[in-house]
Amino acid sequence: MKKLNIKKGDTVYVNAGNDKGKTGKVLTVIPAKDRAIVEGINLVSKHTKPNAKQPQGGIVKQEAGIHISNLQLIDPQSGKPTRVGHKFVGDKKIRYAKKSGEEIK
Image (cartoon, rainbow, N blue to C red; front, side):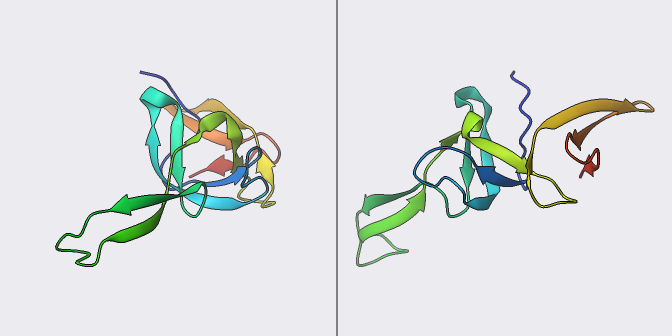
């Protein structure tokens, strides 16, 4: 299984595509496809049939996957996009922001 730098719950910056410059929270990560679903980013229109939740049916806007390479993690200290590094502290492997050196929770 692939090891990705972005995880569920991270705040990310979109550096390419139609939503370039926007930020959002990662809702899910799909490692098999190298994609992530980010809140409010890459919205697509989905046609839905009437069901119990939506008796009317119709067109619903929802988030679609965006490739991991188009996302950068937001530095917790400066609030700007940064690359992610890995290092060992004791026996634990942690992620840290390359710009500030601060640990990413």
